[in-house]
Image (tube, rainbow, N blue to C red; front, side):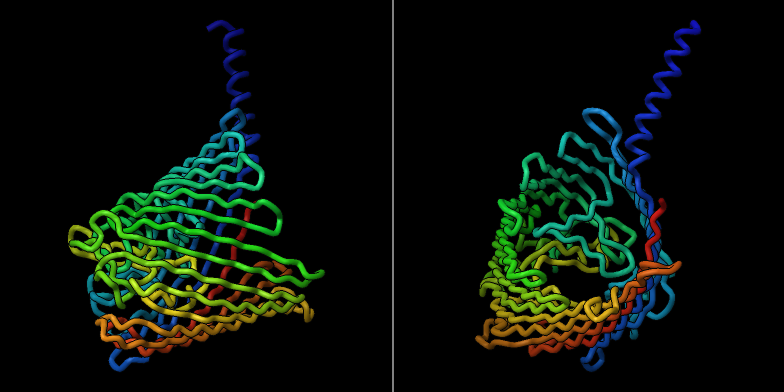
Length: 448
């Protein structure tokens, strides 16, 4: 090779590295997060299994920027490690479900578990595509759960576009999920479904015609389980400085899809009533209004679940592998105001009235300290046997959060949560009273 060709080749290589550094590396972020969780779930029923457990999670994230050019490319990588520090479920058995850690064949918690993965991403103009195994949607039709020591992740692809001012469009397809208490990926299902689906598709958008108004619509389909439409409206009315009223309206319509109701594609309707047992058929609406004044916030709302069946959402806790073992251990979240510490209040016919008061102690000279009190009461729950009986249930939650504001451990966060749940629903229909306590200690260090 001639010397001028060598110079050209070296120059092109250096230019490529500079372009990479200017976007991919220069705009990248790396962090290490630690979470310690003490989880106590006291089953108030005679002979029930109590759970008292401490676990430690470690999370490493690398989020790149995008290479320069018309189409920019990037890479996100995540590594997760969980350690069981002690405890577990009393009266353990292989049938016991542990929502904090994976379990061995005898039901005892494993000593450690881990996951690792990443997303390839591309950006064109104001549109971004991510394809990989650590997707974490936060959408009305699917909310990734992060209430234990590991986050819930999904495998697939998501496209987000912000080409038009005030409008965000989102669509994608997910094929598998890794639950918060699992090192494995499994097919997607609903509560009660033992066969996983590899096709959850969704599309929708958020439109802000003005700064104080948000309109939402999303459609999703979990093959052989359900299709779902969501409509949402959020409005903030500013009364004066540090004083406002926020209105949040939500409506879900869910219908059966494909093999739903047969074989392993059953929906257990939250253990309650259904017009057609095993099938999805539901309409759920809710309205929430929050009055904020300085450091105070008072929220009041109501939710109505239709009489035909329970509210449905992605939950893979019953999916089993070829050897019959549970693959989708853990839990799930749903985009409802009633998705509380212990219960979700989603049974057929359930009318739930709820309220929350919160106070930010920064107004009293203690920045970083916040307190919450929540009360929910659900009535008119239909009896699963169609006897005409109706049941009630309630939950009371208290939460105290504190984040260190300065010093070498700045941003070290503590969260203490306590919940009490009582229900008239019979045990045979999944009605169990619980007292639950959680203590989180979180710390994230971001490399600069």
